[in-house]
View 1 (cartoon, helix red, strand yellow):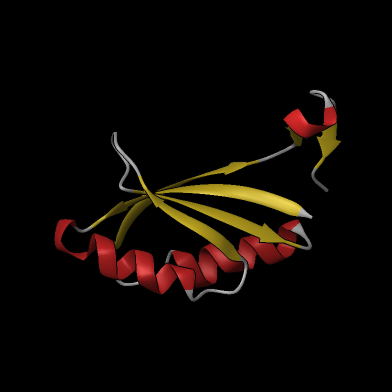
View 2 (spheres, one colour; view 1 turned 30 degrees about the vertical axis):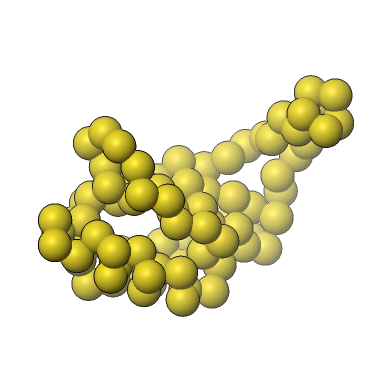
Length: 90
C-alpha cells in the first residue's frame, strides 16, 4: 500500500467545511487540522502511487477551499510495535 501526506493551505473561513469534504474522498484515511504555515494534513492510502496521484490531483486539489498544497510520499514506515524495524510501504 502506498502512502502520502498532503499539507494544505485553506481559505480561512472554509477550513472545517473543506476538512469534512476531504474525508468523503476514497483513499483519504485521515484529516488533521494543524498549526504552522499549513492548515490541514491529509493522509492518503491507496493500492498504488498512480491511484494516489489521481486522488490528489483530481480530487483533493479540486476541493473547494484548497489554496495551496505540498505532497510528501512515504518510502518506509518504522513501526514501534515491530521493535523499530522498517516496514516497506509499497
